[in-house]
Image (cartoon, rainbow, N blue to C red):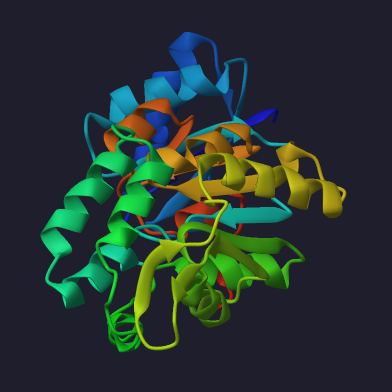
Length: 296
């Protein structure tokens, strides 16, 4: 079959009767659907089909689901397994916004978080917002970085996503508008091949309130995606990009599979693929991996 529609729900959230319901929604539109292929019983299923564009099939499936907590991804069957992953860190690979949490040690979390919110929604320029937030932290003891790190948590499914893809030969890159101080640690923890981010400056004891130039921003993420593809002799179609904020939109739009993950409204509205209900293992199911193939 030329295309595949993947339905993904929290474990146990996909009833065995659901594929037939979706099949019945696609058939009147001219789709020829094959038998369902369960990637994980009660959790993820592939519905191969012909005769309908992926966007049309996805829209019809969402309508049939009537608001159910199920993620829907329709795409070409060819080239599903990607050879490059490029992922945002804050609120994507980790559950928190590390800069906001760092600001808590200066008593500025709410003020900094509001600037972060506006930046991630695309309301203000990312680089300007980053410099403004970092300047507010001038004089903060560097020990606050370690204290912040203690509370960092990987997003459910993050390690499975990265380690499964690397075990299958993919290059996994962490690309963050945050700081290398955190990305280096997260990269080692989750199993990323490389990491790319901003450098937060200090004098050995306290933060200087500055970040090294040039700022690693939206354009830098896209440039990193393209550079890695060139270095690895891949096409953009071979890549998967995932993020939640406005500074991720360029790389999400350029990648072969670009995913808005529990994203801000501006990102969810613009991305071709959305994951709204499930964890990061959804990106493995989207590539056709079976749960039995996941690397813990």
